Image (tube, rainbow, N blue to C red; front, side):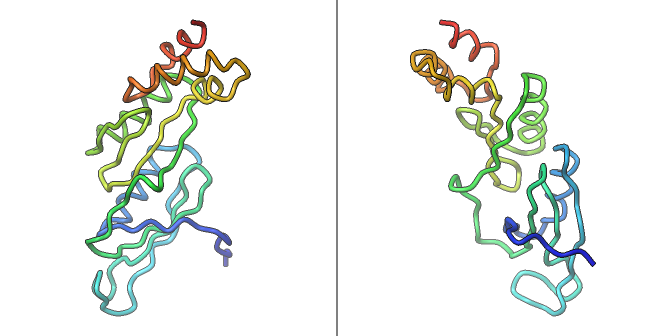
Length: 161
């Protein structure tokens, strides 16, 4: 018997936590779906025997998806921030999320079809923001503010000035 993580992110879904967990496991490396637990009795969100919770892991982060029923929306206060090494990886994750019923937002943010927010953040952008050259950081920031999906080459060009 495995012991659950001491700290797990619990994410509320209307009724399809298991579908979301499988999508995340198929999209991101070091991700998997664990056990699905069925409701022991009828409750406001599901009937006895239906999936109530599903354990999953997104890139090493333990999560539980709760089929809690409608009326609870994800918001910008929580997001997964995924660091990417290059444009191909940035494109792959962005396109998987947006292309599967999600929506683009600004500055590297997008929302999946379940309403969960993601930041697909190239390391080039993070390095530009945190580097010692504050003028380069400002140029990279100004370039990012005009983007939806982050364009690594444009960020690198902004850093160079």
